[in-house]
Every structure is written in C-alpha cells, then in structure tokens.
Length: 270
Image (tube, rainbow, N blue to C red; front, side):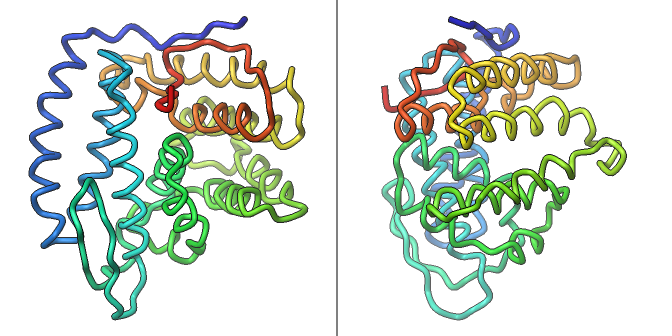
C-alpha cells in the first residue's frame, strides 16, 4: 500500500477558513435566486469549504461537493447566449434565470465541477458539463492553456462512451511541452496537471499497477507544488479533487483495487 499525504495544515487555519467561507457562502446562497452570477461565488466557496472540511473532519465533505456540483451545473447551463429561461435547484433553492453568457464558464470550473459531480454521483450535472462545447470554455474570462481544453475534450468523449478517445489526451500531454507552456504556469502544469493526465492515461489503458504508481506520483507532486511558501495556505491544495474523481472512477467503473492511501483523496460517498 502506497501512502502520500498532504503537507501539514494547521487545524486552526482550516477552521478559520470554514468560518470565513461560510459567511460568503451564506451571502451567495441568499442571492442566487435573484442574481445568477452569484452561482460562481457559491461554486468556488463550496470547493474551499470542502477542502477545509477535509482537514478538520472529512465526514462533512459530501455536502460541500454536492453544492459545488449543483452550482457549477447551473452556471454552465446558463453559459449560453439565448433567451430561454434555465431552471435548476441549487442547495435546495429553486432558481430561474435567462442565460448570462460564458464569462464564468472557465476550464478550471468545468473540471472541478465534473470532479465534484462524479464524486457525489450528480448525473444531471455530469450530463450538463459533458455537453459544453470548447467555444464556450474558450470564451470565459479566465483563459487556460491549449492542453486544458484538449484534456476536457478527452474527458467528454471518454465519459460519453465514444470510441478512439485517446488522441485528445495524447495531444493534451504533448501541449505541456515546457517549450510551449506559459512560463508563469510551468510549475503548476508540470507538478499538477501533467501528473493528473498521466493518471487518466493509465486508467484509460486499464493499467492497474501503473495506475497506482501514477496516483502516488501525482499526489507526491501535488504536495510538492502546494507545500511551497506561496501556496501552503491556499485551500485549493488541501485536497486533490480531480485525482480523487479518477480514483473513484477506477474503483467503480474499472474495478481497480487502488492501493494508495492519502488524506488528499476525498471519497464523500463513504
């Protein structure tokens, strides 16, 4: 059994994060029925709460990831430019809004939202995200590198059960060549995003032993990146959400007995 835990995070810091984030989340939830753009804040803060909760007591992670998935699904359902009212339920609140456009529909939110939907088995959110086109993602205010859009294309084709899904994943890995990656993002690409895609590749290839090795390597590099002085206090690094979703898929869809333990991995269904 391989073991790769997160860097040390003080419980007091996580508890303060939860306290502050709940205030923001409460305000966001109070606004989503009137203001669709507040869904962005609800989704982002739910991620932060899930990460902080995982440090304090993992039993509370499910509710935060479920809310994150619902808010993300609604946000992407509203990312079009038409006039038809979109209706959804987010955290028990019924909302009905006209589309607001793709400004908040970033690649990062898509990937996090999909991971949350997979981990909480929110099939409706999963289907909403699988239908999002690349033009919508590229029109978001927050831009991503070409590899991110290719990786999303792979995930969409793979989870829809299409054939010959490897080419966009291979292309995504090729697009992380340090010679073409934005130097400002090189560390996060090499330490976080490339290892994640290598995990996906091992799962796609049905390589059980290689999958465990890739997961352990990805978690070790995740810890390396997020334990730096600049990043250690950022809740984003307190869990490995996307790796967790791939591990859940490996167990549920491929029947892998994953031999890696880590408090970076979240399993809110258990």
